[in-house]
Image (cartoon, rainbow, N blue to C red; front, top):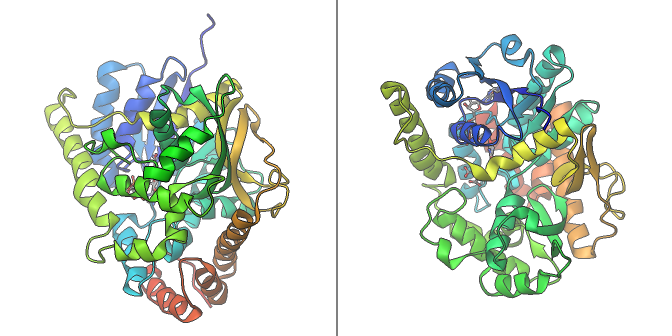
Length: 447
Ligand code: NAD
Ligand code: LMR
């Protein structure tokens, strides 16, 4: 029983609503991913302080041996770290709300990562994530940056082009949430009980195989369930957990209608924004979008609970819950640190993994994760329907990065117009002009 080497991590976006749940999760997994130091980094000191004061108590009550520091100084934050775990939201919820409401004004899907809202968010996020990469390379050049800041697809394309040698890995939790529902549908316990085959872009993909450890084909049973009720689990209806609140149940149900168009595969739930945009818009309330919902629930709850913990200097009876579904971040860090060859879905450069698809596109595919990085597993050729959709969407993502690099209004207009969520170049231009107006502080100047 050799002792595992301890790591030092910095959480970038320390003030995030997800931070306390991730801290509790990290503390739960110390036996396989031991820590010597946890640091928080954010560019909003007030916001970070509320979360950090509570997390310091959470950490030190149980693990006084772990060093803790919250800072807005990049040098302090990024010196002596092995991993940067990044979940920043450039522009915070105030801007997310606009990303959602501006497209809706024109009858177009208003969403955090899909369609024009996701494009606007991408134009803000690129700079923020590049900054994190640069701080890491300056102060801890051997570290890995594990990014789950959204929109991951656009961020990944930007870092591929602008920081091609950097040790950054982009990962998403949505397929994991859906696979957790698959487990419940099938009556299995752990994610490692099933082996899944998946391809796509981030927030834009399909499962084409699900098997048990001993090789049983589980697709027929899953398809039967999805055909009837999507990924919805009737017994989950009352659970108001993350990805389990009523809007998520609705999302899980809608997988039924996305599945119908291609019964050979099982879809990622995000495809509803591209394949059922009319239904989505009809069910949206321009006066109360997901941003409002999160501000009124998760954000309020997390900040209230953190203030309470700090006030009482006690951690008992608090309302924060351990974010076990985020343990994929530990799986990834452990694989890189200890060379576990864990099989995980990551966003990587295609480079032939999907044979009949752009080599330079960032795709989401299963990889074996080793200490020198991910080794993607070959997918082979994909069908025309998926290929066509992915080509259009990958072009949108590339055009956003072109627009950001060149400061090109024209390219950004093309990106928005090409999104499957947008009906015409006229509407695209109206949305772009409104989004540009409110994003001046965050986007590069467009000419
Ligand atoms: P949030 O607004 O609560 O937190 C984001 C934090 O990032 C804020 O404290 C903000 O001040 C900080 N920030 C913004 N720009 C920054 C910059 N340039 N440098 C440093 N810090 C900066 O947002 P949230 O709802 O907690 O989400 C955070 C991100 O995580 C989003 O991109 C979200 O899509 C993504 N996400 C994470 C998970 C997960 O499993 N952890 C799941 C879904 C989405
Ligand atoms: C959230 O705030 O729950 C998001 O991360 C996911 C979403 O699409 O709302």
